[in-house]
Image 1: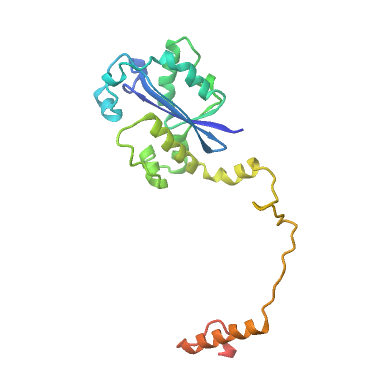
Image 2: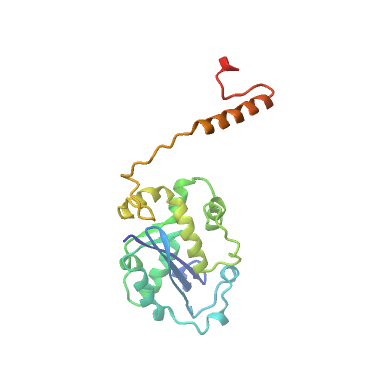
Length: 235
């Protein structure tokens, strides 16, 4: 089973080394590059205010986060959800930097040691569309993905949108994935084996041929420049 997790975080600011903290972490699951419906989402009390610019982005106030659990209280569930999966993150260095800082505070190994590897979807987008805007919003627009609900940044919604973007970014893998993952099957939904079936050939009757030719003659008369379906020698 090919299991991938699309992950996103929201934070109090831009720099974990300056004390900024995670305030929301969310992830959605893909199996064979298809959403399963399984997801993880937690708000976290950062025990500090958000920078005004960050607050304008995510809208999660100190009052809202005051009764939420600390990161240490949600980390076990998070690590269980991502364990052994490939993690897809847009601008992975940012989110992983915050996750590593939170894990270090708890005396735990870096995030990459808890999963099956990390893929940066921003790097994938830049490789496909060099010199273009490759933000999540820009990619949603490029691929025709509806992001109208994204009035503020939310980790779960952003992870769901990124899951759609990632499938589009890697759409060249579809045929191979389907060939490898689909079980051998020679029967249609009704149980008919078309691979070995001999299809009957039904010929038109003289009456049907006559009706067909009558229709062609009528069309011939109505066409100002003659028909295009007869050889020129017959026109």
